[in-house]
Length: 236
Image 1 (cartoon, rainbow, N blue to C red):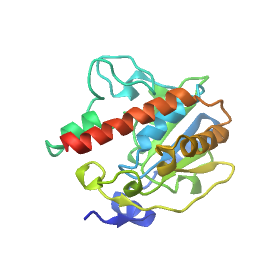
Image 2: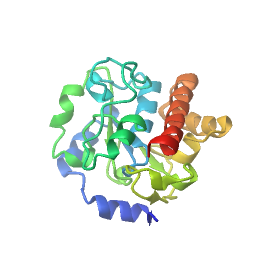
Image 3: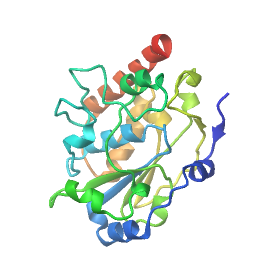
């Protein structure tokens, strides 16, 4: 059985700290950046796509999309392939899950960068940049808006053991909400009950003060859930 991990376990396991130069650069221009933080495998890339697909003030670059041949938007699936380009793999059996049942993005992780240099090509004068992280404590040292993703995947998938890229049962419950940080429950956002999803999604929209994109976000999530069910039943 896969272990249950807490936020403290996640930080110890991941091990990477955000550099002081990155903190300084973001805090000098907090209005130009936001961060979405989620432990590995907890659908941080999905939340990233939902935010950028809702809020047009964020820049979206084709390089982010993980689609080799198509110029697609954050909430669009490739039309020429079953799924997105795959993550770097260490075991072949992950190919099907990575290609078929994930929604990756090609945005450098905050804690992997020593400076903001890697993000400069994606900066636009009239746009903000959403940065991703696997840490949940970014709000403690960054002045920009931070989205924390928490939850327990066991409450979403009946047999998580079939998933190789969801390495453990995240069981993170610490909720922190204030002017510059919001905590989003992945269990609610991915819930098959429409009203449960809607309430959580509208909280996210309110945090960024933008109008919702309900139909496109819901359609993207439902297709992802269908892909996970199909993978679990026939491909895993």
